[in-house]
Image (cartoon, one colour):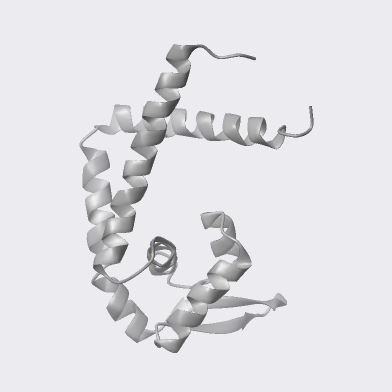
Length: 152
C-alpha cells in the first residue's frame, strides 16, 4: 500500500513531535543526572509501592533485561532499591524502593508527574480521551504493520 506525499509529511510531523516529547523526559532526567530509562524505572517503582519484577519493568518500557538489570544494579549500589524473591516464582525478584530510594525519587517523580498531568489537563478531558484513543489505535496499527516486515 503506497502512501501519498501528504501522509508522509504528516508522519514526519508526528515523529518530530514524538521526538520533542521524548526530549522533555530526557531533559528532566539529565537535570537529575539520570538517563531517560533510569527516570522511567524510578517512575514505575514510585507508583508501585509493592514493587514490581524486572520482567514487568522490561515489558512496560519495551526494554531488554540487560538494560533494566544494569539500571537496577546502579540503583542497588546507591541504596535506592532492594529485591526480594517472588514466592510464586522464585526465578523472579520483586524490586522495591528503599526508604532512601523513596526520599530520592520524591524530589523527582511527583513534580514530573504533576507537570505531565497539568500539560495533559490543558487539553481538556474530551480531547485527552481522543488523544489516548487515537494513540492506542496508532500503536496497534504500528505493532501489526511492523510485525509483517520481512514476512512478505
